[in-house]
Each structure stands twice: as C-alpha cells, then as structure tokens.
Length: 388
Image (cartoon, rainbow, N blue to C red):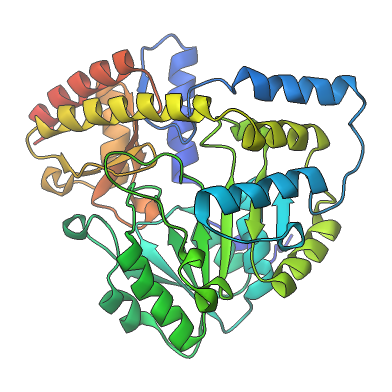
C-alpha cells in the first residue's frame, strides 16, 4: 500500500517511545521518576467536574453548533476582554477538540504549498508536523540560552521572505518556558504588519507565569496586528483538563468563518459535556488556577536549584509553563542517548531535545510532586557525576 506524502513525512515520536518504555518499567515494578509529563498532575477542580456531571444528568449530550455553544464562546469572549484586553465577538471564536486541534485548523485554513511558516527553535514538536500536513514549509529560527531561548527582531527579520505566510509565537513556550515582553512582541508585530504575514499566538500556558514576568497577548498591541493575529488557547494546562479536550481560537472574522466551516466537516463539534465543564472553568472561581500556579512555582525553584548544583549540566530558570531545559552539551552525547541512558541507568524519564529542534538539551517537567523532584535530582546528579 502506498500512503500519501502527507502522512509518510510524519516522523515516529521519539518522545512516545521513551514515555512508553518508562511506563512499561513502572508496570514491571521498577521505581522510575518521570519528568516526562506534558500535563499537570493535579486533578480537574471539583466545580468543573460537577458541571460535566450535571451536563450528563440533564441530557446535554447531543450535537452543539460546530464552533461551540454560544454560552461557552460568550464566556471566552469575556475572558479575552478581562485577561487580555482583546475584543472578540463570539462569531470570531471557534471552540475545538483541544488547542492542538485549533492550531491544525489554522494551518489548514491559512497555509498551502509554496508558503513558509517561521518557527522559533526549540519548538513544540507538533508545529512542524502540522505545517507539513498543510503542505507549507516550516522555517526554523534558532535561539540560545543566552537570550532565554527567544528570538530577536534581527533574528526574525533575517528569515522573512516573500513566501512567509505565518509566524508561530508561543509565549510562555514549550519546551523552554520563555516569556516574551511587551517590547519584544511590539518588534515582532511591527515586522508582521510591515511584511504582511500572520502571527499564530499559542497562549496555552498564559496563566502559568512566575516571578515578575507578565503575559501579553500580541493581538492587544494595536489594530493592525490584531487583524493579523489568530490567538489560540485552551483549558488543558491552566485548569488541568487535558483529557476533556477543549481548546479555542479567535481572530479576524473571515478567517474564523473558514475555520468553522472546515471544522464542521472534519469533526462536527467538540464534546457537549466538555463544553459545559469548560464554561464553568472560564466563568467560575479562579482560585484553583492560582493554587496550581503557586505549587508549580515552588516545584520550578526546587528543580532549578537541584540542577544548579550539578557539574556538566546547566539550565536557565523558566519564566512560565512547567518545563526546564537542561544543556547537556558537555556530556558529549546526543539528547536521545542521554534520555535513554538516564532511564536505563538512573531510572529517570526525561524528554530528549532532538524532537524539539535542539539536540544539545533535554526537557524536564516539574508537573510532579516535590518528593519525586528531590529523588529525581539526586539520581540525575549521581548519573552526571559518572558520565561527565
């Protein structure tokens, strides 16, 4: 059987292979500390779960409008206004089956063969795959720890061509936890307006920002960039709702209408039950978000402190999300080799940087308990001392 180029070009997930191996070891009774998780370890807050249960009990289990219920889109519009100083009408919002679905919809609606999509590296590993599936070409912009893994205006300008269709902005970012300032975003916005490309702003980690850093939505920086931005968000990270699969996007009406039409044929609508829970999350008490954020910040500090005491491995303190990127270049091995060795020899699961576009780093998630972080730091320190 000959498969299409669209799917043949999608690489097998190195991340999945390592996490599957770690899970198999745990089932065999081996004590593995996992820093691989890309999801909060907290349970979904009770008031959100109760809204989902009530949806089932009340019979809210049928089709909804393909773009999501008006109730939920109104709640999202209110959230944008309150949190991000953004005016989006419900007609400009499309609710999807997770933020990943929202992003894929956008690439499918905007990009085609001959287009280029600019992506800072290291990047969330699904961005290039989605771009390739849209038949556009991903173009990577390298970053470094010296600039907290953020691009500069000069970096971006050097990669812009007549083929540039979109720029992917992820702040706070996965895997680096980088947060762009308002001034840095103004520079990006200026180039987008000048050269006429779109900004796809992935803000899924917006509520998980620590210290003095502030979240800024690039679309809030003026009418011109507002008209060239599609803002993406969701409930998976901030509300610990990964399995509920609710994400959303907002942008210019013409683009969002096209995305709504696309989704209506591809997926009908997001889960009615999850939409009720999402409405309760966005419109309800936000103390649960603040509590999770405080705990994540403590864990971040604990992990960074542990790494700073090691030789031949280093990191910068992330300003957002729940990941720490560790520079392993002094270990003289690839990130995949390091990840496999850490799992086999130290019983610690980490994610190699190679699928994120940087083979000199590994990603550690602090979405796990403090006892596990302390145990894992001890194991990594001992392993590094033997392999440095």
